[in-house]
Length: 284
Image (cartoon, rainbow, N blue to C red; front, side, top):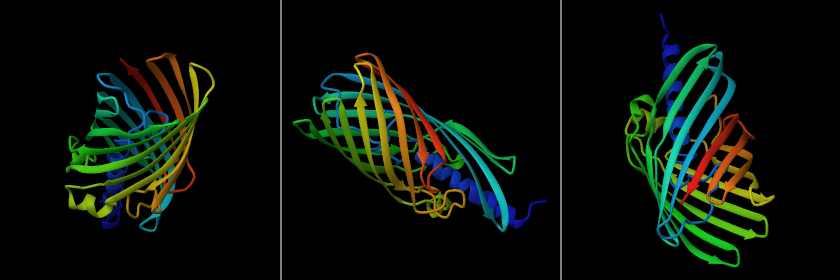
């Protein structure tokens, strides 16, 4: 028979699972933060009037942590897979409209026993990117967006309420080099009181990326960043902020097709151990 301590531990673990699922389902913040893999940092580029882009993106996240819960050491192994297609249309030369969906699977074992295995449709996004400035290789853009509650919040697949966010984007290009910078804010709103209690409402991300084009088909990518740890008092993801670094590459077999793969590593305990972002982008 389960003890009250065991019940409390399971409830706390499920709440922290919802927190991370929520963040991962849309790429680190609820809205206004989807970017082309392997980056979390978005660029200021737009498609152009009448042009389309389809991104078939995903991410595999793994961590293996041991923490003391209720006076007992618990080893938690977590594997999360997120698929997030995004369809973008250029409504003007400097304005894009993007619609995104997500599909999630989250599996957690604790001391070798399956504690959670959840799979389903996550929340969706609608975003607008407006490039407000472009001159001499420097571009600035703003990207507001909404998170739409299409996932089942009772299973940890969504928030149950509409959330919002905005991203400030800087891009500078010179020769084969590209520099990126983002400052993103989102307000996460939860339908379930227990989710609101165990997750942070105000979420920030500050990140910078660097790209170097080796040739017409291959580009190398690097990134560093800091972001709000969405979960409150999660023993397996402690602290208020997560720090990360990313390395990756983008291969373009044609002008309108990109294949991307990367590795993101945590540099503190507030971030999951590692993630593998991947994606296929098609433009027409």
